[in-house]
Length: 345
Image (cartoon, rainbow, N blue to C red; front, side):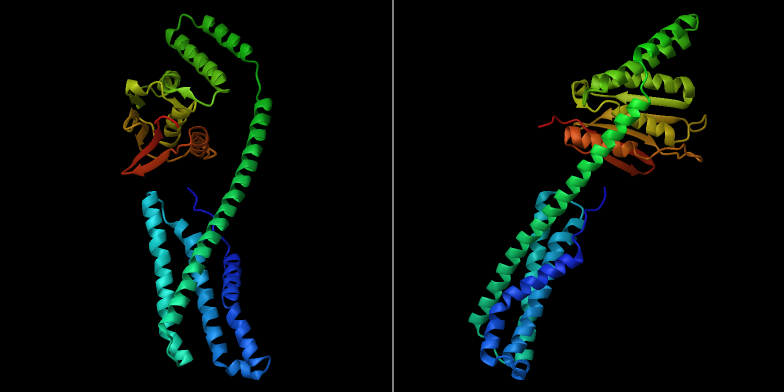
């Protein structure tokens, strides 16, 4: 997954400066009322007070905005409770640190004691500013999400147009192909292995055509199609390719995007060595409301050409159709893909 887009630093600085100006505006007005527009303004105690508080409010605003719009989104999400806990601790930490430092340095620059009432009022202002910053941060993130959504929709529209164009370019009359396969089958009827190969190929093509207009198919249908596909793979690689399928019958009526399992098996065949000494074994099994497809990684010395978008397209299709995410994991030389099967809400 790509890291979330960050809010630009210039935008954060502008907002932080605006907040600092607005918060210190009453002090600014008070300063000019007492000293007017003359050189005494720069030697006035009010000017030092204004200058100090302005920069502290600016740094506080910048830190809080940076934390709530960028930093917190770089941390991997585990669960909502942990996420909110980190937000709470981070914001309180920034608030307490800023107030503590200001209370420490203020008497040094101003050279006078600050009453408890003034400190309480100052703390109250910081808390109000933090609440405002939280709202602003949320608006900034929503703005980014909206922009990404618009870009994603445009990308999908472009992709759909490209798919339609490709379909037009590669269009072939299905009846012609089926008739050709039937003719081929009649020519090789004495060769049982070749006849079976053609039957499986014909079934695969029919399934692809029929599932083209469907977003979801049952797992039972997908496994039947996968059986035909793996038959063709076994015909090519013989005992160098093995597949072990262990699916609980309770999951056979669950829905998945068509060709999902086939794509994962094809991915394993394309990227792994398949030889007498190192046969490829693909395991497909159900566990905890999920389907797992895994194989031991033995990378080919010469990789076949590919676009590298197969898994990405499957991820997007799965998320768009089922509103769930597939999980790709590689540990201890085992490549594993997890497909959720829990019922959609």
